[in-house]
Amino acid sequence: MRIGALLSGLLAIIVLVFSACDDDLTGVGSGMLPDGDRMSSKTDTAYIAAKTVSLENSVYGNVASKMLGKLTDDILGTVKSEFLTEFYCAENLSFKGVDVVIDSVKIALDYTSYAGDSLVPMAISVYQLTDTLVPSYYTDIDPTLFCDMERLLGQKTFTVDSSPSIWESGVEIRSVYIDVDKQMGVDFYNESLREDNAFQNKDKLRSYFPGIYVTTTFGSGAMISVARTTFNVYYQYTDKLGNKDGTQDTIRTSTFSLIVTPEVIQINHVENASIEHLLGIGTETPETPYLYMKSPAGVCPSLSLPIKYIKEQLEELGEDSKTAINLASFSVKGHTQKEVDLTSDYGRPNYLLLIDKDSVDSFFRNKTSAVDAKTCTYAARTVSTNTYNFGNISGIINEYLERDLDEDPEFLLLPISIDFNSSTGVTQRFYNNMYPSSAILRSGKDDMRLNLIYSKFK
Image (cartoon, rainbow, N blue to C red; front, side, top):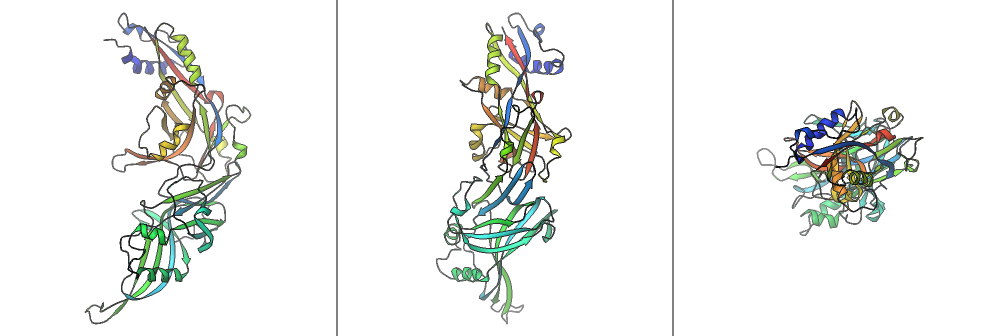
């Protein structure tokens, strides 16, 4: 049995140890092979061209938590996030008792985390949707297509620091309550009395009450991650003969609640501004050897993998034999000294996804739970060195070497969040990162290098 292929892994380890000392490892490992299985190898370095590009405020943003607020940075510009949502209605939801009296109506926004300044005042405005949402989930959605801006339901000015909070399962949950006119509660109650009322299921509710659009109308410097949204009608009712011994009527209080669940449509709308000066910056701008990254839906690095160059090297090496790429190591490093110039509290992304630009849409829309190592891979941030190490991406390189390409393929580096199974730690799904994050990556020639090992079998 020919064993050249079996030594690929061993060869990669050997060259990792010695490649810093010698760029030509011809004959490494060949003494271990029988006659007829001679293998030689060569190390090489290819350089990746990269630049900063805009995501045009459009990424697939179907995530459970909704970002709300606005942040401004002297370098990265501004980002504003808001959301539109339907409500879920339990089957045959109804008011209790008789002689119902509406006390108040409130929309509650519960959040567990925030970015920015906890003391900055922000004003929230909530509008009623007039059209049913469509499940597009892209962050460039136009709210005015579904909303009458004259249908204001309520407003509230708040600060993170002043938001009331409770603790649930060791997590602090802050809340913002927006008062709504009591008449809407009255209308809901009257609707519930009809035989064919809107509260029989979520589909009927959608026709009667399509949902809400939640935005901020002034204030910049904070963004909250809304984990739970509810529409609450607080009321009193008469519980007939409801006292302890069943002899007298009793007045009780209760809440008629519509909630937001994964079964209904929720869409983030994101707007980035003042980012034009970042576009194009990268390996071709030696005076600014940086790559910029900003989420949600802001800017990211675009990388041209040097497939044409690698193919030429393989052809020269393998005129009379078989050649392969055994190792293609790649990492990117944050420019820690430059990142301190950022004036907003974005934080660094925990994970970066390296993915073919043409595969981005299907990757997130298909609710992917694993990378294929042929068109994409990901790396976690090493905090101590501010580095994202993608390791060996030879699977991607070899995939594109097999393709008939006129130009080098374009890949994006995207900040992502990952949903892990809490029990097994197994990846359940990848998401575009909707929480504010940023990075300034080094893009000097030595920073955008692809360390390669070519092997040759005879």
